[in-house]
Amino acid sequence: MSKKYCCILIFLLITNQLLAQNIAVLKQEIENIISGKKATVGVSILSIENGDALAINGDDRFAMMSIFKFHIALAVLKKVDEGELSLHEKIFIKRNELLDTWSPIKEKYPNGNVSLTLGEILEYTVSHSDNNGCDILLRLIGGTQAVQKFINSIGIKDFTIKYNEEQMAKWENAKVNTTTPQAMVKLLTLFYDCKILSKDNTKYLYGLMEANSRGAALIRGGLPANTKVAHRTGMSGNNNGVQMALNNAGIVTLPDGKHFAIAVFVNNSTERQEITENIIAGIAKAAWNYFTTKAQ
Image (tube, rainbow, N blue to C red; front, side, top):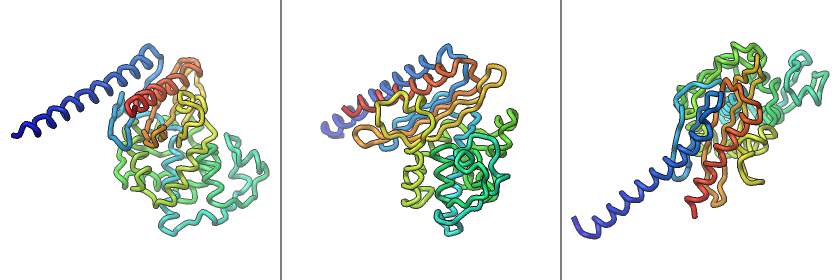
């Protein structure tokens, strides 16, 4: 073995060791954020370009809540890619389809009986977390079973969707729709790399996620103003002082143009809402600091 080759090998070994130490420091920082909190927290973070990764409770199952609207949107847009649906086709929404739930569609069209394009319904669902829009999309593509089959077919096995938004009004039903932080980050990465949808529809859905009007105090709350974050939120109400889920998952654009995928699931929290939000914001901030410092 030549002296030059030995030097290169030693350099690579030292570099890998330092990287491992750095990611270990980040992991410890995140564990400190979680420590002592009255909640179950799962985290997965992955540098899309460089591969740096960490997970805490990453293979545990967590209730998703409206996080699953991302999975549903993927299933819908796959049918657009395959020519079964069109973003421009009109979908007639009956009055009885607009239930009393979180629904900007119902707020704008309280009497229903209106036709919206598929693209408009996707925007309401993904960017504004419309529960009625979500269930309209599910009925259009064959229900939760169709989404389950599609997500499993692209290699995401740690995912269960059985109930729609209307059915999730029942506390026990909402617990059934689950995924893991690791599976969520894997799905986000496959999506970003255009391994699920066409480039056009990947760009389209990415834009809807960047325009998300929900969750300002979550991942985005820990990052500098105007940071680009393509994300989905998932949150429940409280039942006897317990918040089943406050979740956020997405892709963050760094100042150097690189990206990291992050999923933070906070389940069964008995903390105040502000503290629960700060768990997610603090983890996102720690990840941001790690990746931006490393780039210098």
